[in-house]
Length: 307
Image 1 (tube, rainbow, N blue to C red):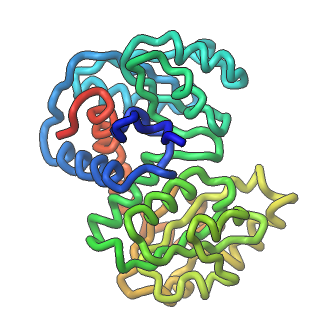
Image 2 (cartoon, one colour; image 1 turned 180 degrees about the vertical axis):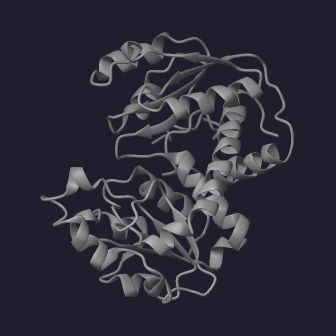
């Protein structure tokens, strides 16, 4: 079965997910982002970049800025151009667009694959998040931070803490890390927030926070949507914080130089305590700074030749 992200020669034509993305393409995007962060963004042949991110104006503006820097032509699509609840409308939209790049954020899992399957010839799809399925670029930013600070990924123990079941970033970073050779990936969460497929993903489920953090090199903290999951999946935010909230005392079980990476906006007193939250702004700024070069890189790779 052909990978829908690749053409018959194995070249990248869409960025839909890190799952099944060959290592050379993951490394190409990361290396291209580094090169683009270090210098001016080289222009490519002018093509439209269609932006459908109706619930993410900041993301839309960031992609528009990246497109402009590459001499591409950002075109914002209205929500009515690809109805959030109608797969047929999304397919028709993708089929009717001119050659270029479609950056798509959608509430439905699998929406990016649907758009790619029906894309007009010459239209490349970038998944900017499709429900709980995948969100490749924030995941690649996490991996890039690990490369920048830890250098060698092949001797790391990485622990994910939080709502792994519903996080598209968690799924995406797990696939990216295993592709790049991270030898030990662990997961810590209440059983109701653990996906059933952890063993198939090469991830070890840990029974306690202490077990998960023991000698960890990197800890990725996933945000909770407390209002959505409380009750059926989570007894209370307070109980979660008591069992799984990160404190300086809990992090003492990890390596002394542990790298703590937030995979989204965290709530002090829930996922982390106040002292840990106070230490996060520098790494949050670093991750935000890594995202824009990655946006540049994926647009450059899909719209032209990477640097």
